[in-house]
Length: 231
Image (cartoon, rainbow, N blue to C red; front, side, top):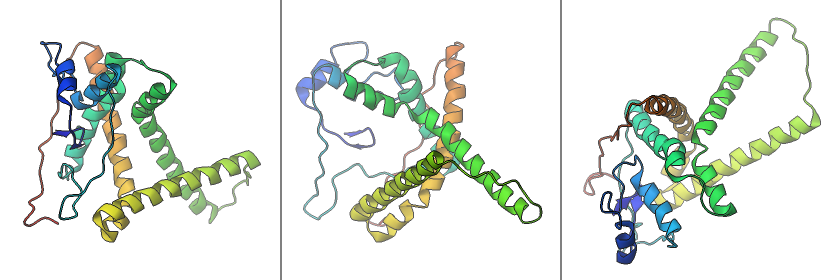
């Protein structure tokens, strides 16, 4: 089934265990990210999961093939729903059960809002840096050298950013070719822009829900590739 954005398979016994609550069934309709919550519920029930990378007889990766929304508005609405369901409402619904490893994974899942704030601050700092460099061309500015610790931190951060971009390029190129891999790097800027807008929308919608307005399952229109015409 096309669950969690990929092709998923569930054991019948586990689906039966998830469906023990007759009011909700295996996938809770009250959740904005019911597929994500199903995975965590399976873990709470003692189930296990496995990431499987397989190709069919023609060499194509077995997966759910679908285009992500190709407009900023639709992409922001889609990502905002994920942010609310996982990072905000998911916190309320599922808490922090599990051991240290599970705690760490849930923390990574729920960092989206904080990450968007950090990204916004980073891009704002970049704009200010460019403005200061241009200003220094016409008037003297005081020189404030960085401390060794700050310099080391910035170099380490640059290494992590380059490593992440390299992984994006390698994995996308391996699956979809060199052209798609090269395009994955500059698309990071667009993804960050969408993430910032989505976090803003998610926060406002979540605050409204705390004031009594129910959360709405804001579903975007899906478009699947035509295997005869789309690459």
